[in-house]
Length: 460
Image (cartoon, rainbow, N blue to C red; front, side, top):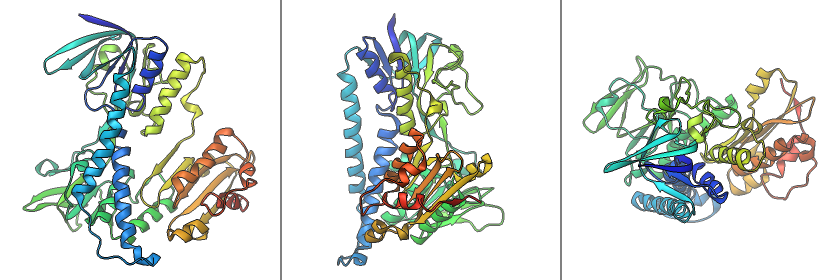
């Protein structure tokens, strides 16, 4: 028997549950389908658990540096079972909060199974013991993504970890080799080095965090190598072979093999769109499997929307939640919000963190704009000096003609928070002089941003 709803939401990540809340509050009957874990990547295998682990790693790192602050301490050890237990407790509490919210949501029925389209308005939900058939006027996809497993010679012969399975470790690897040199890879690299493991990062390209400007990439590498992490770049022909106590990874022809106990794959993400039956609904995807959407997140099928990681418009919790806000604003609030209205922003959560907003300097140069740039090392930021955390720098680039801020990188202690004041000025389309003339609290990281903006020079 087919069950009829006003809307079907497939996926209970960061966009699905709040959209269900808005739709049910508007009097609609909603079916929400989730085949794995309520809360999606962020709650279960992304932001919540990883940043909890980052906090434990930071505590260990700071304890080892205690003497720098005049604090006497003994040898520092890390109990990985307790670290994992803390992570699990925080993650499970967060998941339960979303589950309880959905369970108490009037008008929302949760189906725990695998959804596939049967036609543009019909979704079949399969379970081990049977199935349900759901029909709705509107359908919203929030199905997320998963780790890419590359085709590497010898990989099938060894055990490997992804960003999901590494979260289940409750013992310390003797030597963690990480294949990949971008955001997820770098966070796990520093985290496990601080837990006490030997860590090697192997990157195919010529530098780490290659989407960033070269000064950011170089600083990232310096920070990691200063903590004892080995970095190998130019790994253009990786081969893996099994050994008695682990594996060996050869990064390129003629290179010495790297022996490791644990291998983490962190070479990218792919959308969970290959088993949704999208062809039965007529929904288009691009060459990488991302669902093609317009500026208001509608697919080529007029009554179907795609939100979050599966649409290729951003692979962050905040972009997924903003997708929900855009869809809800257009459908329920007569507010024509668009994806193109938002400014690119994100963070890299190594320590110190990198907060990013808008364009990189390389992108500004490529645009041909006449621009100004301001840059200040964190060693000239009083708060960073007081905290004994002076690695990194801050920089801002502005349009010389309009005086609007084009982009910023705040790479240092508090950078993931301080960047928001720049983001807000950018969103308001106010000139950079508005921020340059604002009085800030001393002593903070943010107080030096106006000073930096008063010292702008032409971008060469």
